[in-house]
Image 1: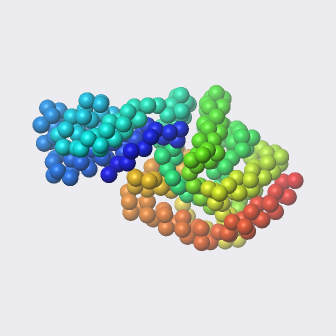
Image 2: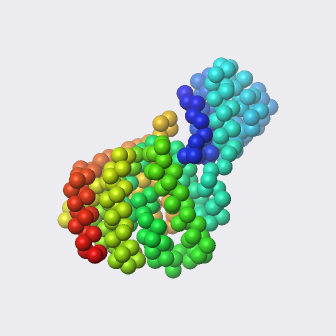
Image 3: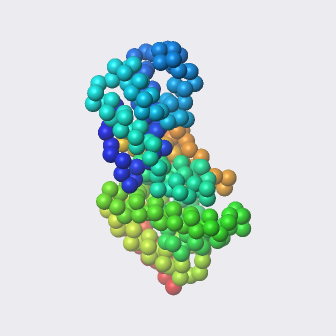
Length: 291
């Protein structure tokens, strides 16, 4: 059953819409009603019921109340559904950047905002939530030729990355961030030596946060998985999902069996990586390389 959760700085309206749709579907199925039957009783189209349940359309408050009445929902839960619908109608802080970021990135930000744990495997670059501003700029400039992004869009993406870090890691209610970085991440140069040195010092600092766990997979250890970068996200009352990163753009993986494969893959990476203390020592050693 959906829980009453107040909309916070980390809340995602799009995610609340998905939760609302899932809960309305659960209520319908608990009564053994089909979408056609619900549509007939409310004089709706079957497509409308489907769009609401699949979060393609945000139900109006009147729609939510009509469904709650039809399903015989008790008053307390009815209030939760209405509040959830209200939150889903709000806009996240990232909405003002919608014109300069792709839909898949918007989706990731919304997912992160609701997640309690994010597990990240990164074989090439420092994960976005752990990047310094100068490293992020250097990385963006290095990829600008290939992406052909307008300079103003690059600025927006740096601002977004900074805000993601603030609202997810440096807040009273942070998410737990667990990452495995390949050792080559520490040596792949973006910017000058100072940029790299500052970035590695920042990794040491952020790894000391109670809610951050960072492991390094040494260069001499063959990676136990052949996948590219991915994020495994866990939520308090929603199935786990995986976000795959690639050149064309990110892809959300929701199939439970496939998500479990990624979960196991991350577990193998953690087993082969150095522990936290040894990882910090390796980062410190690599800092000397950039001095």
